[in-house]
Image (cartoon, rainbow, N blue to C red; front, side, top):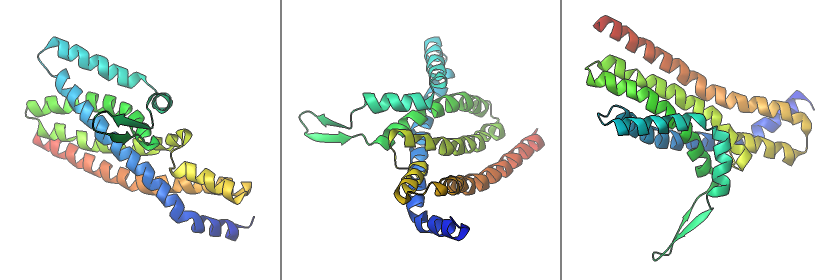
Length: 215
């Protein structure tokens, strides 16, 4: 297969692949929102004066660290039904597979947020605002890790970027397109993550500089 033919195929399928990458970003965003909310609650409990609250939050944090997200994805696929009918209301709540992938990824976010936000909240209580704000670039950097990890959602049937790459390869029936297609998928992630990584590094460096000057 000639390079021009490969390039033409990649250009032709780009809109379809972009739709899959949008799903990666959406899954990651939902996972970060859910995981951050629960992680914030655990962080607050870890700073509680009640020993029981502290122990419970530590156990929950350790639990979230110990579960491989890919295993939890399979667990949710088999344990959560595709839809639930609420009695009396006759309302059907659906659980599409992408939600299950987001919930699985949120597990890792819970542990990260609980650990790092505990430090940030403690610094905030002590009046050390600069140190507390360092949580922001750390959170953003972790969000990019979740974006990359969202590609594992393809194994449970989510139509994200990697799954759509496989669909294109199967649809064209050309195995020579496999390597260029996967490299093209890598380019999607790189172009999205690398600029944000540089931005967060600069932001973090400025925060640390201000923190050093303030001291």
